[in-house]
Length: 150
Image 1 (cartoon, rainbow, N blue to C red):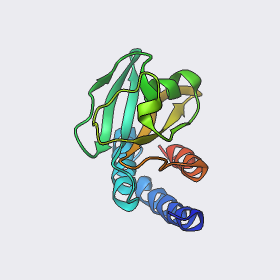
Image 2 (cartoon, rainbow, N blue to C red):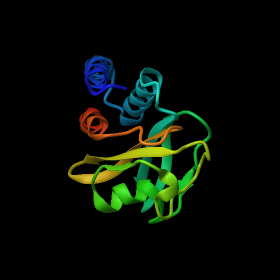
Image 3 (cartoon, rainbow, N blue to C red):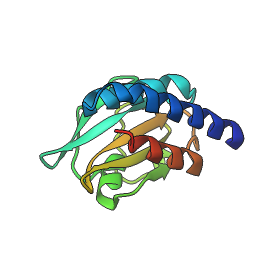
Image 4 (cartoon, one colour):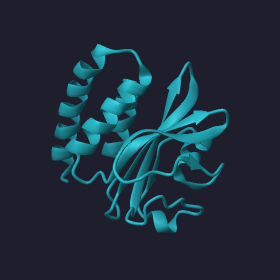
C-alpha cells in the first residue's frame, strides 16, 4: 500500500477507534475491538492480536485470524523480542528471524508493538502478514499510537 494511502487509512481507523473505545474502560474489550477493526480494515493483516504478559509468561489475548499459539516459549520469537527490548520490532522475513515461533506457517512478515500500563510492559500487539516486507515505519508509528488507546 502506498505510504500516503496507508497513513490516511490509519488516520481514519484511529479516529474510529477513539470513538468506539469510549464505551468501556475494560482493557480486554478495548483490545478485542482494536484487533477486529485493524484486522478487517487493513487488507495485508493476516493475523492481528494481542499477547499479554502475565506471571512472566506471554499468553494469547484477543485476536483475529487463524488459530494462535496459546503460550509463547519464553525469550523466543518476535513477541518476546518486543517485550525484552521494550520497543517495536519490524521483521521483513520471519523465516530469517532467529528463534521465530511459527504459529501459522503462512506468516512471512511481522510487526510487534509493546504496550504499557503504569510504565510497565503488559503485552504486545502482534500483526502478521502472508507477504514479505509488509510492515514499515508508518505501521509502527500508527500501531504505537493505537496501542496507547488501550
